[in-house]
Image 1 (cartoon, rainbow, N blue to C red):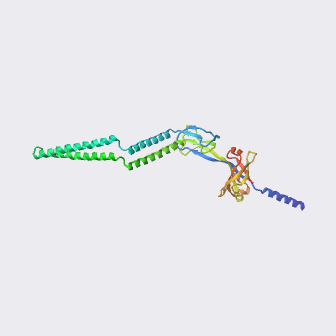
Image 2 (cartoon, rainbow, N blue to C red):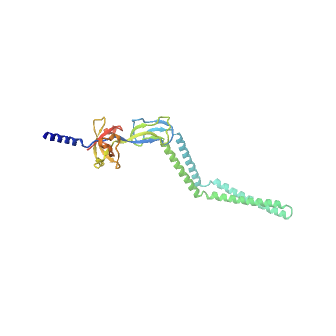
Length: 313
C-alpha cells in the first residue's frame, strides 16, 4: 500500500508539472508599407531591389515624368499670363491710349460741328426751294450720327481715365489663386512619380520592372519598416494577467539564442485561434492577438514570418 501511495504522489506531481503554462505561438513580423503608383506611367528605373536597406526619402522606382512635366509647365505659364494681366489692370491704361481716346473725342466734335453747319445751310436752301426735303433729311441724319459717335467717344475717354474696376482685379486674383492650386497639384503629381521610401526599412518585394506600366493605385514596392516584433495569440485564461510592458522570452525556430520581448498591446476583442496555434483542448477556445516588441540589435536582422514560441516571465 505504501508503494502505491508513493507512485500515486509521483504521478500527481508529474501531472502538475505537465499542466504548467504553455508557450504562446506566433510569428515574427515587420510593419509592411505598400507603395503604390500615383499615375499610370511607364517604369523608367527600378533603383532598389529586394533585400536592400533604404533610408527615408530614397528613390525606389522612377516613372516616366514627361506628361507630368508638360502639365506643370502649362500651369506655370498660366500663372505668368495672369500675373501680367494683373499688372496691366493695376497700372491702368497707358498714356498713349488716353491720348488716342481724347483724339477720337476731338474728331467726333469736329464732325458734329461740320455736319451742324451743313444742316443750317441745307435748311436755308430748302426755305428758298433750292433743295429738296430729302437732302435736308439726309444731312439731319448725318448730324444725329455724329452726335452719337461723340457720345461714344466721350464714354470711351471716361473709361480709360477711370482705370480698371476693383471687381476685375479681384476676379483676376481669384483666377491666379486657382492657377497656383493647379500648379501645386501638377508639381505634387510630378514629385510622386519618383516612388520614395516614406521611412527607413528593407525592401521586401518589387512588383514592377522597367517598361511596365502599372495601374493607378497598383502596388509597386512593399517595404518593411520600423523594427521586428512578434505577433502571438493569447489564451483567454492568460488575458487578464497581461498588461503593456509585460516581459517575455522568445524562442525563434532555427535560432538557439532566445530573445527578450516587451508587450506592446493586446487586442480587446477576441478571435478564433489560427490553425497553427491549436493545441489540445485549446483548439475550441477564443484567443486574443498580442504584439511583443523584440529588444536587442540582433532582432533587427530577423526576417518576417519565422515561427516562434513565447514564454511569459
